[in-house]
Length: 252
Image (cartoon, rainbow, N blue to C red; front, side, top):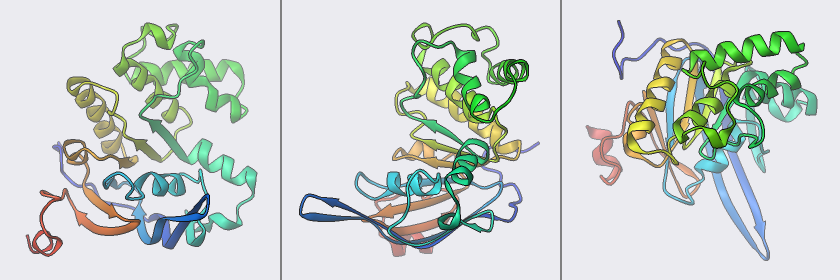
């Protein structure tokens, strides 16, 4: 049986970006959020993307999730150029290939857990009976089988995040992109969510975790650290002390 921090064999490259840049015009100023990032992510990896505020990690997350387009550079998803995808193809990638989990949950406040989890299936054109069956099963899988008819204001923070994870899983994506998934949770509940992500990794999902918290990043098997829009360190396993000089980290 695998233990935490064991490394599963990785599959083929699923995300391949080369020299990606992203510029934002803020009035008369141009902000260079990404300055030439090159990164490959393989199927079945568990990777943490870290960095201080303003490092570009949120911008990179939006690029990886096909939520934004780069100013320049190359991005291939499953061997296909993202720049050449039309709107329908991009929507299909976001709905079927990548499951998104956000810090703020992004649940519809007046809808039940079941209805929130059904949404991606509605967009995918799945018939109602199958939608209910699939959403109920996934909610049960994340431990909320007895909360399917509860609305978000009737759930704890951890339960709301579990609903969000169920929604991310309902279309069977291979990649889970989690942006600060424990940011609004207490430490105990945060550990429960990380245990759930761990199980998804052991099941074969690719996990991309965006966080600024070292104890959360320690769950990953690979750490990419950004600073000023560039990759400062790409390390197999967890970078033990991000305050150490890079040369010293590299030599350990």
